[in-house]
Image (cartoon, rainbow, N blue to C red; front, side, top):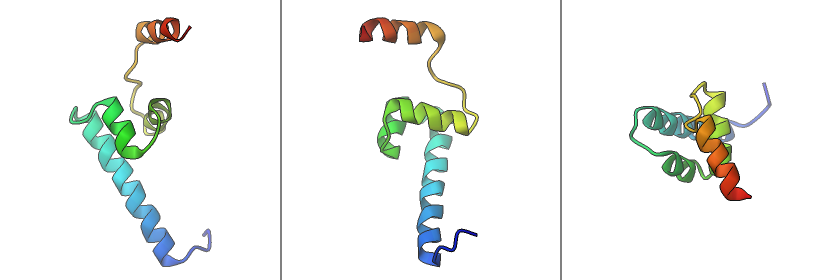
Length: 73
């Protein structure tokens, strides 16, 4: 559909598979959020966005968010 060569599509599929596997390990409690972010080569906030795209609830509850916001200030 996007007129890409097979090797490009294969690399993209491998990347998507890696991302899926890492998220599956995270959901199973085998990886922490920071470890997941490191393995996906993303920031923690980008990783949380990716998790939400896959329907994984945010690992940070509202109280933790407020504490982080206060620490940021």
